[in-house]
Each structure stands twice: as structure tokens, then as C-alpha cells.
Length: 220
Image (cartoon, rainbow, N blue to C red; front, side, top):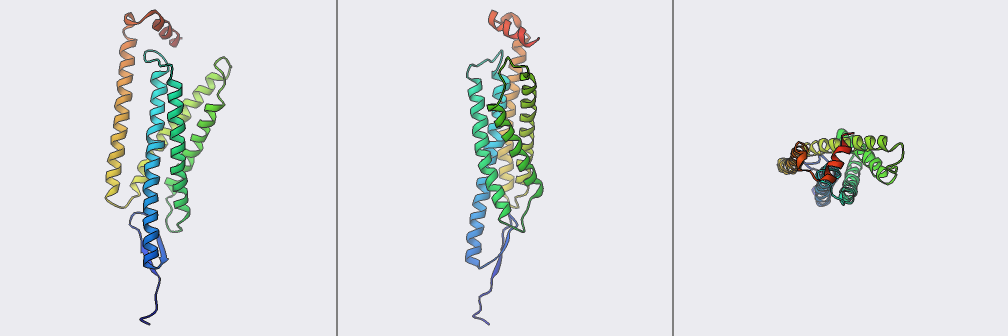
């Protein structure tokens, strides 16, 4: 009886995964799962949680007067495309982690992740299938693109905090404050740009003739 080796259950306090494995194998799987969870979180924060909002800020503030930049579309597309690609890899890892454990399923986090991926994919298709400026449906496409884009950003931020809240360790508080700091930076940049736009718009005498024509066209 003393020579019989019995399978030992190994529990992860962060993931809640329980597997009937020998100790050495259970520890190995736990380390791999722990590493993949960190990668999943980092990729999602960078992709969905930072690059997508940055792309929205670029489109909002550098498309027209007073911060018109000829390269705004390329920068916007770069942020959205790279954010989508990075976020998709993180999402795929999260789906794999969920499917690899029968005991550990985060339904709300998983469902939100699937919705975000679906909406973001539609956004990427919209970038490539957008109608020309002179087409009649262009205005409707712009409304759809903006509404869906902001929906993806709001859901992504909510799901990142949802995922952090599911971590059962002191690391959760560290990640929460790191992401809060990133959001504060984005918010301050957005507010500063909005204030600058308002100041310039309230002082039309400082506009050049070309700027005044652009500003007038935006008011129509």
C-alpha cells in the first residue's frame, strides 16, 4: 500500500483549474496555464484595451480642423489593425484556456470576449468595404462604423476589468492599477485634444482662410 502511487489533485488559486495528475505533471501544467493566462491578459490589454481607443482618438481629432493631419487615416488604420491582430491572438489563447478546463469556465468573460471579437471583425471588414465619399450610403456607413467602434471599446474595457477581477492573487490589484493608469493617459490625451479643438473653434479670427473654409463646411 505504501508503494502505490496515487494521482494528486493540483489546484491553481488563480484559475481554479483542478486536474487529477501526478504532482510533477500537475505543476508543469499549472505553470504553462499561468504563463498563458498572463500572455492572454497582456495581449488583450494592449490590443483591445489600448490600441483600439488610441485609433479612435486619432480619427476623432486628426481627421478635420483644427488638428488636420494628412496621415490620420494611415495611423488610424495601423492602430485598429494592429489592435485587432494582437487582441485576436489574446482572445484565441483565452478560448483555448477555457476549453482546456472542465472545471474552470468564466461565462460572462467568455461571452463578452466572443461579442468583442465579432464586433471587431465587422469593424475590420468595414474598413475594407467602406463606400466612396461620393456614394449615397457613405453617411450611414460612417454612423455604423462610429457606433460599432465605440461599442467595441466600451465592451473591451469592461471585459478587461472582468478578467482582472477573476484573478485570485495579489497580481490582480497590480494589473488593475496598470490598466487604470493606461486609461488615465488616454483620457487625459482625449480631453486635452477636445479642449484644444474647442479653443480653436471659439477663436475663428485665428484661422487661416483655408482653415475657416474647412470649419464652415463642418458646420453644415
